[in-house]
Length: 318
Ligand SMILES: Nc1ncnc2c1ncn2[C@@H]1O[C@H](COP(=O)(O)OP(=O)(O)OP(=O)(O)O)[C@@H](O)[C@H]1O
Image 1 (tube, rainbow, N blue to C red):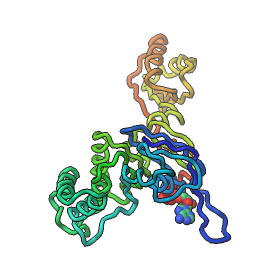
Image 2 (cartoon, helix red, strand yellow; image 1 turned 60 degrees about the vertical axis):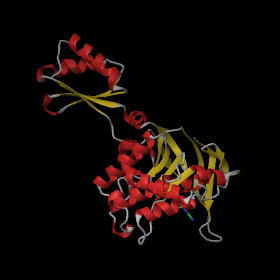
Image 3 (cartoon, helix red, strand yellow; image 1 turned 120 degrees about the horizontal axis):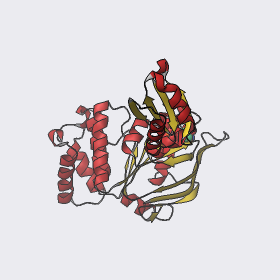
């Protein structure tokens, strides 16, 4: 649904100053119905990538196809097939959600009666009916963000671009916006979003591309990315008298990358590639050594670990 090859963009902040390579070479493939997240520190090039794909900025080089239309040759066609929600949103203080929705639909060339009907449907779908006729300035941040999403999809695009969809929202409003994005995905929408929030990428995205210095440094499902860095961690609680024997037995296993003793002889912590494969082997080996674990606990590394390990300025954005 979105394919890019070597997409790039530089900016010249002032005449004579050195150009900033905001996006160096983005190669990206987003499948139909997927929620794909661009995750990266400040200034990594996420917004620039999104703005190019939404036809708001002309790329300096590279190719892209969005919803079946060529970005450079048919930007008008791309525009018709996409929705774009900018970081700050697009609502006006003095207008109501209903007015904004009707106007937006009309701007997409939809007839008056149809526009009113679509606005009504969108108000209902996004849980906005209750305050549909109040001015947007009276809405909470989360309500306003939901109006932004509704505006982004009023013309039923095939692809939706969301720039930092939940920035500045409290946890409850963020959860509501996530629910709306999940609903759009369930309806078959393809979504490309940018985020700073690792938790958001983990909760929402089918796949994540980690962007640093204008390039995707790695991509995969949240699970793949977490495993890539540090595998899984298995904690085995043991009777103190059996810890030595268990350690000797498990050290021999090829699936165990690293092994540490827990404090106070309470057991072992094992770093393995994939817990689902390792745990049966661990249990067999322990049984053969005559020990029985009191507890087996699995832990996945967090996306924070991945992000910090892969981006040069991870700490800045975390
Ligand atoms: N219009 C512009 N003129 C000059 N430089 C720009 C312009 N837009 C972006 N840049 C620069 O390009 C780089 C990438 O910016 P971009 O906004 O794409 O990053 P980002 O990953 O979206 O960051 P953030 O998470 O802070 O929004 C930055 O160094 C930024 O300063």
